[in-house]
Length: 103
Length: 492
Image 1 (cartoon, rainbow over the protein chains, first blue to last red):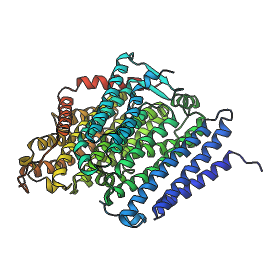
Image 2 (tube, one colour):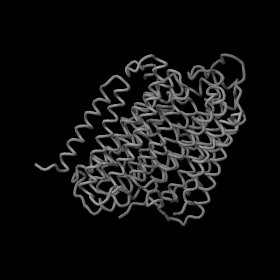
Image 3 (cartoon, rainbow over the protein chains, first blue to last red):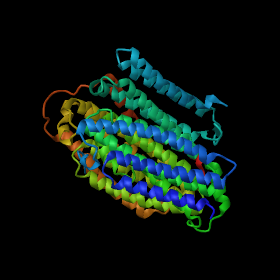
């Protein structure tokens, strides 16, 4: 059996769905952040696969992947700084404890 | 390579770096705000000069077709520069009192976020849309967290986690669009989609799913229901000047991207009528939900958060009109730009007055605005006038803005949507006027005057004049917005 574009896309969609589930269902802020990284990496797989199978001579998709990785690193840095900050304030990283503001 | 067409952004980036460096040297931090305003003014002057040199309908692409230099981008650059100037003027008091040790980073981040938004308005390429969008929103995340108290950091955490999820969703949409077309440049994508000659909107399911995911991603930026969950919490928790910036600039940047992306790559009649309908439904939901939940709010920042969701709904009436009837679209696009400008001045005037008042009272609750007319007549008058503009009553700017957007909706045959919008405007009058009533007729808690700095008063004056000028003499700005949107005309 040869590996084709479909296989990569199925993998990517499955990873994306797992990440989305984690981001919506998990309680710990750090785990939510990890789930977001999973979603971004699912996108990276899709981008690289599309790039390889649809426009094999160009590197557009791969370049996009590099940009996503860089921006995701910046985002993780800021998010972790914010989580540190909120841990100092509240002594917890459980997302459902952050309920100072609702309605 | 022509760097001249990139000067507004270069100046802004350099000013941000200069502020961080100056912060290490200068003792009087007020200078930093002055440097920021100066940088924004120079950037604005470059933008105006570029507008003057532009032929009507001319659009040149720079950086390997990644950025457009056209009237549409220049209009938004000018708008963001203006918004950032007013926000910095309003921040001077607040930053001095609440964040005395981190003013350099604060002003630099405001400028960087404005830079990201300027780039958002001019990008014509999926990669640069993503990068500029993240530059704008990551800077905002850091700004939201600036107070470091429990509420502020909670707001920042909610904002960054939700915006992370949403940008992943949007990226998945971009990946699908890229996968179907093999291009990332908007014009090239549009060419490929036109040559596909689809028979139904779902003839290419991947493209349809990609379009929906992009709507979700951009809907988050403009605070449309059902992607609005972050808005009230972030507005309440963030430092008030940041809330002001977030409410007007982030929304304007989102609409700039939506207008450019949807009228180019999804501009095919078949697709545009379906996204037009999606925006019509989102508009009805946003207006109704925003206005109804704003009614019982007791915190003024939270109330303005729900009001901003409702305003996004009014703006989306224009988007729906563009999508459903390209013929009526021209006036819809100009209407959206005018609405964004008038919303920007009105909301900034309101927030500037609120910053001055809450700086004195230390409370965001509407009840603590009691009798403010006796303690701060000028501030109360400006706040009243901007709230009248937000309701959409003449002679303020909001009336003309709503008139233009709604009439585009009627012309596109969306009468039901416009009826809902007008009913919603009536509902909204209740909660806006409640603030006015408390300010003018309730008994003040004390007789103490409310102090405000010259910078803040000057910013408030400019914003209030803007509200009045756009309301009384809208012709000039309408001509400008029509010129700005002429390049977005639908391709055959």
